Length: 500
Image (cartoon, rainbow, N blue to C red):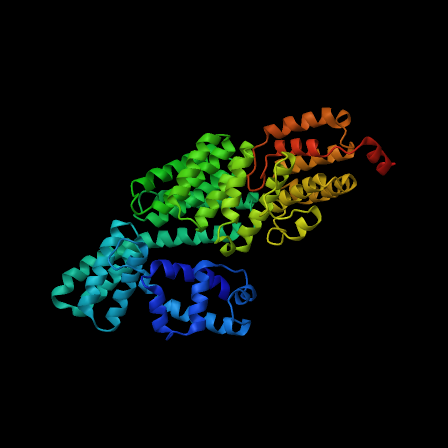
């Protein structure tokens, strides 16, 4: 946690706080070890305390832990210095709403009122319901304390408070649902039928409040959950329409909803990838990246969506471009384990594409070996019908690339039990069907004259199935079969010898 915190906060303080180094030097009385750690983390990120301690000259592990912890204490004191008073940022409004409460505690009633009024007016303008509620409660407190001539003022604030309390209740409800959904998706890339029904109920519960609750955050929560429902259901045009409706809402509030606009552009790109509208999807991706700040979670998520878009388009160069942009970014190391593991898994498909296309493998690319590949996946190993299934398919293709004909047959046949146990009754009919096609090819010795006619029937059936979330089908099933046929052609003699 120490290194991850330093990776995050040191460059942020250095960027946002004027004269940050001078202020830190004053607070820590110029302690050389603390200043050395601060200077180093301005330019570098590290995965562990051991690598960080080794990278700073003269800094042992014990000293790094001690002075790194001290540095965090000083940096926490500097956090309020990042906030510019009276500007329109969310942080500034939240800071003033909290500060007015502190000033009340110190009996600075008049100053507290001025600060609370400023926070309230800005929060209302931005439809930040919870912040407005915090501010108006502080105004109520001041009016109640002073009494007398402020009684009428208190009553006005009291009525506003009642309306905002209802808005805040709905916003808190939607926020809790979003957090629960994020937690669910942190270890699963696809959902089961029960989860899909749950999302449908959530969408129906929140829908009546759309346009009626004056809260940008609430609408952000609703459109996020509704999009997940439509997209997971395979209703990609409905999901696109939902995101378009959200975009119209945010554009009317563009001054305060830039981040949500960028996120919605990424969702529109998401839909275009599944609808085969690649040029349109590329436009939405570029718009998303324009609105997103480099190195943020949303920025990395947009690049991931762009990666899938280009992979489905068979545009290897563009896929490699966004893959490199994400994985070589200095903040990539700060991503959660599940997000970095996702990039590792989907990168395997790009590696396969590069090899089969005869392109040079970049030096920064991971070394993908079929035996080690699955052992390095831990976060998604229990996502049986989701990303783990995609990883298993990638492992088979990696085995094929390595020319291990006998092992390919063994591994594909071993997947039959996996298919029966996890996929037949699940939410992934295309993946189950794809494994069935793999088994057909394996048992036919990968000889087209044996499996060709039956495979054509399976391909026609696959084409009729709704495409899964492309976090599962990193490469569409149709393209997966093409790759398997092109890279895996063991001789009939070897197959016949093995099965004799």
